Amino acid sequence: MEQAREWQLVADWMGVLSDLDGAAAVLEWDRETDMPEGGAAARGTQLSTLAALRHRHLLDPALDEPLSAIAESSDPWQAASARIALRDRARASRVPEDLVRALAEASSRGVATWSRARPADDVATWVEAITPLIALTRQQATALADGGDPYDALLDLYEPGTTYAMVAPLFDALAARVRPLVETLDGAGGPSLPAGPWDDAAQMSVARSLAADIGFDLSAGVVGRTAHPVTMSLGPGDTRLSTRVDSADPLSCIMALLHEGGHAMYDQGLPPEHRRTLAGDAPSLGAHESQSRFWENHVGRTLAFWERLGPELATAFPGVADGLGADDYRRALNRVRTQAVRVESDEVTYDLHIILRTRLERRLITGDLAPADLPAAFGDGMRELLGIVPDRPANGAMQDIHWSAGIIGYFPTYTLGNLYAAALADAAADRVGPIDDVLREEGPAPLLAFLREGIHSRGSLVEAPELMRDATGGDISVEPFIAHLERTYSPTSSVS
Image 1 (cartoon, rainbow, N blue to C red):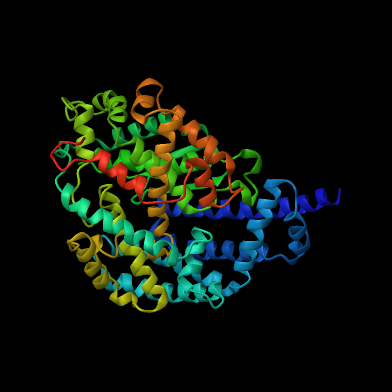
Image 2: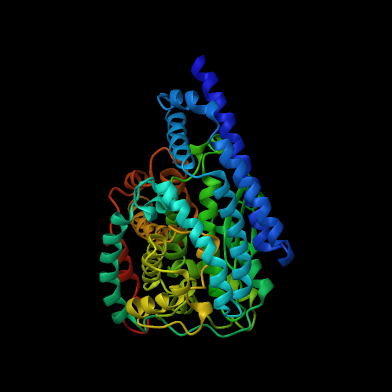
């Protein structure tokens, strides 16, 4: 009876945390979609207030004894929630509330400045905005590290238990395997699609239809349009994703939809009875990214996917899509071309972009790299890893929103997600059937069911490495991903 009372206290406390997160997500979604430029300062203050309230509530001392008791519960969901809560409270106790507020305000200013400065290639204004934000993030990292490695403390926010010493050799091994592939595969794929124009409204209509086809529940979600695609869970029954539109290239919209759809279906597939608990969420961003990359790269790059989507494209884009077959779309998509923009890069070169950003942001946090020197260092790193230099500042260090929002330690999760996704695709092929065959015979539903059972339904019962090990049968490795690249691409003009 006593434990039931303690669990109710903990459950109510977690429910308030969930509500505060949902309220912040509403404001962030609005910031990305509809907020006028003049609202940036007020939005920063609003988000700062919510962040401070969450921080205060997270550290409520009345939860000390109930959480300690629940940590020993025989109920795995309760014990997992307590484990996560104790970890989060230990982190939060090291960061003063005034720093939490300052970070939220500086983040909102940074995003607003980035949205103006990037299109204008205004490096000076951007650097001026991120310099105080990076300084605050260093303070946060130092506080969280409590004498340990500051970058590890930030990485741990997104990938609990993971350190730079763990990912660096993995990333170095991946770079060593991928760079020769880039040279060998340069030119793989087919010609670009016709320049169009591909009607913007028709692209969004296709995106919504595709979201429903792969399993996104439109009665509990929204498909929107933003400059930088994003997914946000505003609360149970309200998951929002966005895609981008390029009138010269519909593939950008479609692949962004698949990527964000993977995130969104993960959020929708988490166990509803645990959604307002800490264990009812994904265990890490790498686990979350595994879902987006599964749908984007292991479904969206197959011939069967384009056989399924092709007729709808022919109807949606009369004239422009005439005569295009499934292989035309696939070959245009699977072109290997080294380029500066991460979100438009091909699957073979993508992780070199992530490795570059991981190395640079670690230097930012350790103090080895000043924000003012970031653009030049970015260009040097791109030349080293990819053999090219950005053609303009907007396609260099300014291209991603992350650093402008103070989100540092996040980038490694993209590559961890890629490695997890490749292993999941192999496991799906073993347990459900070859992905091409499944798509042709039954559609995407069996693939979603596989992910629901092995990943989504388990929430954060265990940490991400164990979750993925249970779902795939092995530890994280570069081998499944490299094998996938070698199967998918050919050094000739066609795709194998």
